[in-house]
Length: 381
Image (cartoon, rainbow, N blue to C red; front, side, top):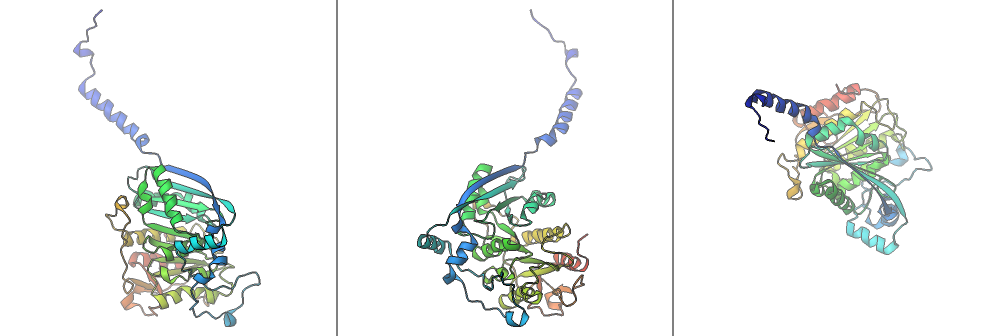
C-alpha cells in the first residue's frame, strides 16, 4: 500500500528552524568535553628520594657561601639537622652513577594524578604540585582549576616518600608526562613549561628541580619552607620565585626568624634572584583561604611574563621569555622586629627608596599592588 504525504502534513520551515535551535541550545552544555582525570600508583625505589641523595651525594654539594651566623643568631633544636647547603649540582648522569655505586634502595609506592580541562586543545603549561602538605587541596581547588581553564593549563600532583620532598633523576618527570600525555591524548605535556609548587619540605621539589631545569620552569614557589636552606639555589635565580612564610610558624623560628628571613634577600643580593618573599601575619605552618589569591596572582602574572602567547609545545620545548633583572618593581621586605601587618613600599626600581639589591623583586605594577595589599591586609580583594 502506497502512502502519500501531503505538503500540509510536513512541518513548516519556521518550525524546523526553531526545533533545531532549541535542541542546540539545550544540548550545548552536555556537548562540552569532559575533564580528563588520570591517577596511577607506582612502586619506585627510594633511591629517587632527596633523603637518599643527601646521604650518598655529598661530593656533589656546593660549598655554602652564605652569611648566616648560627652561633650568634641561635642554635637549632637537637633533632634538627644543621646542614646549610641544599645546592646539589647533581646531574641525572651523576645520579645513575650513584645508584650503580651504592645499589638501589627498597621500593615504596607513590601516587600520581593528572587533571586536564576537557576543552583544552593544546596544553600550554603544567602546574606540578608536590602533595606534601597543602599540595593536595591546592590541586583540587576550583579557583585553580578555573585559572587552568583560562590559560590552557594542566595540573599534575604526586605524593609518596620516593618523590614528594624532591627527587632524581629529573627525567623521571618527563617520563611520567610522556606516559600520562599519551593516555590523555595530550603528548605535548612532555614539552610544556612548568610552574612548581612545594609546601614545607615539598620545597625540596620546587626549588631543587628549578635549579636543575631552569629553562623549563616559568616560575616556582615555596609555601612555608621546612628548612629555609632549601631555598638557597643559585641555579634557580633567574626563574621568578615566591617564598611565603607564616609569622607564627614554628619552622620560621628554627633556628631563628632573623636567619630564615635573610635567605631570600641574600639570594637577591648575591645572585640577583628574581624572587619575592612574603610573611603572612598571624598564621602558622599551613596556608589559609586568604593565602591562595596571592599565589594565583603570582602564577598568572608570571605565566604571562614568561610564556610566549604563541607557544606551542606540540612543536617542541617552549623557549621561555627571559626577564630583565634590572627592571620591574621592588618591594620593601617585611620587618620581623615590627611583626604583624605592615604597609611596605613598592615602586619601580629607579624610584624605590630602599636597598634595591635585597628588596623583593616584583614582576610588574599589578602584582606589586597585590603583594603590598597582602602584607598590609593579609588578604586580597
